[in-house]
Length: 410
Image (cartoon, rainbow, N blue to C red):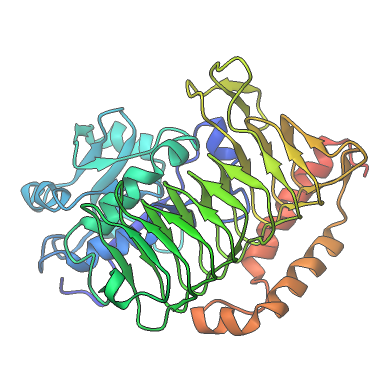
């Protein structure tokens, strides 16, 4: 491509109530799904395109939660120098090829529905858009496998086998690889099960002794898996996170902690979350029925029987917290109290089970302290060591909205 910058522009598609209540303090494109964030996946796709696949003078405007396959490049080429919009098989806006002069670089892109109304929607099965947040749970294992077995997926990695593994390591080898970086630290007596999917360990990952790892599984850069942990299939562990106990079918965001025993399953966890010792969640109802989830605008039937919880950025739980099936906790919610049971929807900036409003300045003070404690990792990953102004402003807007909903009182 004959341009210095990426041809990709993102639209924050949060038209459904469930997406509006999900990761409200940061862009949807920064969310993890599979081995990558949505933005990382699109950037890699753009870098893989042959020159002039996106014609000069055009931009590829994409939904912030769309997922391209390699085949999508052919659809772009077939469009030539003609504006075109694509929808996925479920009818959701996925992407559009638009003349660059029609997109203001400083203003948000128009909503996907407006683009489809103007250009028409060409159904395309080479790009997919998750319908609801629980799709990130049910689809994470398959997404990991697709991300780790596609073209170029092995670049910069080495395959690990019993011959070069640490003392006492056990491999249940199948059709999928276990891949690592040179600076991964593996202690003795780690169990690798790649029979059902690949396992990938990022740079500077530490896996302590007596740990069980089952694929499909991604552990991103600088994460630590504590001794004795059982990290099961369909799980993504974000960069700089620390995880112990039992985890399965979970998307676990960057710089979050679950260092101690306790079960976490079929869950989506944001960034900078801290789960106290013996925090457990339920991911199955006693009657095996489908799970209803409330993101703040009323309960919705997911149609799924295995749905755990959705914990937004900066959520904290006390020791012994029990999180009910389908629970949603908003940004900066603090889960503690005499009963220790959390269910339904917990609004953002909730302080304890009495439901008081967490003071904004105190919340920010805690965020900054967490960043100070992880300063070296943040510098290495290229992230700011202090809370960026735009993130603080977004959180302040969310806090003010929550204060207004509560009648302006704490």
